[in-house]
Length: 374
Image 1 (tube, rainbow, N blue to C red):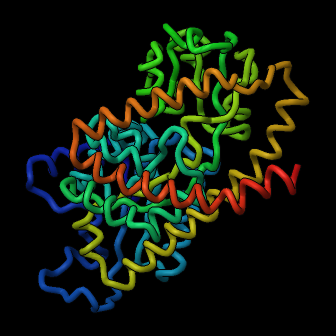
Image 2: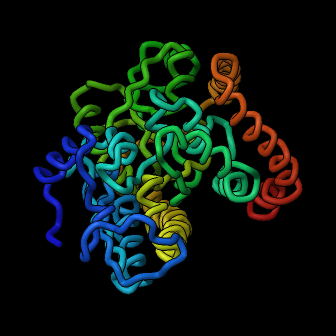
């Protein structure tokens, strides 16, 4: 089967919207899947799926990880399931990936759940919460603390299944061309910052701008935005932010352990034989481990490069600023919970798990890092 082009994809999407077509994921090299096939029957049918992403084509770690995952699926399935990976804009714009999977015009997508805040406010908790849980705690909540069941509930109306497909770890606070000494310095600031962090910035008097990764450098360079957060030293260095910004602030109060997600169209997933379903899930979980490992290794290396190769000042946000942002975060979360019962349900679970995990970490990670590794 020839690889899908953007023109063919858009044509396919139009047919789907009209409700008159079965797309590539429901087709095989032996023709359309027969109705009534038992879910546990293993056949030699071959499936070819498309994955769209919110990342620029071949983007380091994030986009590359998707291609690695696709290769693992192909090898584990003996070629019975092939996944073509497309960067942002190659088939659909970055921030239209959710709709593409929901409609079935793409079988899969990779991004972060806070990108869909305008459509599904509760989704943000499956990405990151300001002053929230780190990578280890987020993974524990999703896998073993009831988070996955809530994620399934939140996405079910959209015919989407969400899976954790990696974590960035604790991020940096962002790149600025002005000093941040107090909360007043955030007033009027136009900053690229997604999700709940953006809501908190707005409460502080700033303006949150949500743009795709490939547009950030140009927007910052041209003054469309005054500041940006992205991820961490590795990606920030490759984006070249150290060449156009004066200050690099930490910590990433807004993203203590951001979960990356892979979305799968539920009907397409359920149409796969049971062994291919398990292969797909296993490959996604392998991608999750690989992604966090890559972030930890590369960020340590590239923080040193930024220090050695640029004149950027690396600064910690003042305690006054962090404390004020934490208070504003509480206000934002309270307002969201009051306005949306599903948000409250998800946040209650998240918050309860965070309290337990925090109490445990006081006896483990906290004391280890502050006393034993200092």
